[in-house]
Image 1 (cartoon, chains in turn green, blue):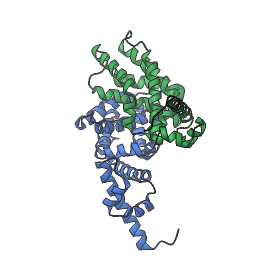
Image 2 (cartoon, rainbow over the protein chains, first blue to last red; image 1 turned 135 degrees about the vertical axis):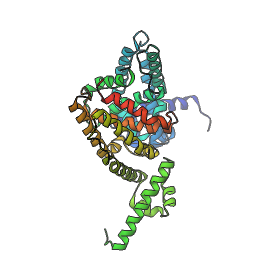
Image 3 (spheres, rainbow over the protein chains, first blue to last red; image 1 turned 180 degrees about the horizontal axis):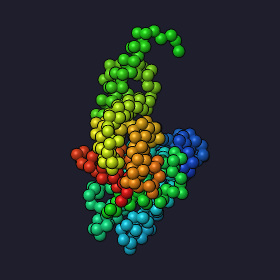
Image 4 (cartoon, helix red, strand yellow; image 1 turned 180 degrees about the vertical axis):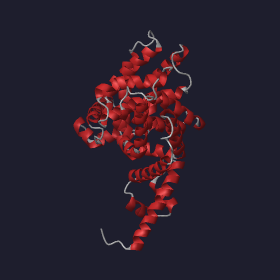
Length: 192
Length: 192
């Protein structure tokens, strides 16, 4: 609430950036990493950390937002428009998985710390891309039309995240995930 | 750790049963119901409730276990063996959904309060039934074999639970859920 001088704001921004980068690294190694561990590794006091992120939930939420922003940037570079929708789907699934896979434990942490609806909201950018592809696939006649659009979009998200959970639980070999996801989502989205 | 007399044990069991029944009712109305609200509605003190369930998480976990036990009892009455696997799948999906639908907000509460892996463990009974059906469908030649069994089982669970979340979020009309789930899971499990 007091006056913020330029250097203090710069300090705060640097602290926030350091905390987010450190939290991302620690949560990717251990989805159960505590706020105390993250503060220590980031070299900031717990009071400073709590000043920016008042709860572990708010910290995990900010890390997730940050990770999805990066994912969005990577996915925006994909050329999907030049491909028929079923091939574009395959490319989108594989690329989405590559990004998610690098942060899979982060999403395990997010699943534990955040309501499902918040996770969904944080993915609104990537999910809008999925939705546009489904709409185009339907227009081209190659994607199914017997299920609601919003249902297909949410199924894309939960199936993708389930792969991260199944790998974490040791039930799905990491190297099989991209192929398993492509086959599963093709069955759900593409006409029979 | 002290000696437990017969009447005190009976009191404790009655309290636990009342707390579980009340928590089920309240969480089905509002997935965010607090421990204080549940204790008040159950007519027990918070100290008594915390004596049995030391955290909200442990209470939600016990309510989930109780609900899945009931589901298991209902599902065990289904005659799936006499039907070809694809029809048995349809019956299992519709029945599983009917049971989940009655408790859908409870599962929203569980998703928020418990790790995904705990929720999965609590469903081991119903999931074993799904697994047996998939194995039989494969033996009969009607179910796909190009995806790992454990992946198909976990997909069944996350897709079913996603329907509860989508209804809660107002994106899926309740009356469409059974049909949407049947079509989706048929696409994932049955050979093209």
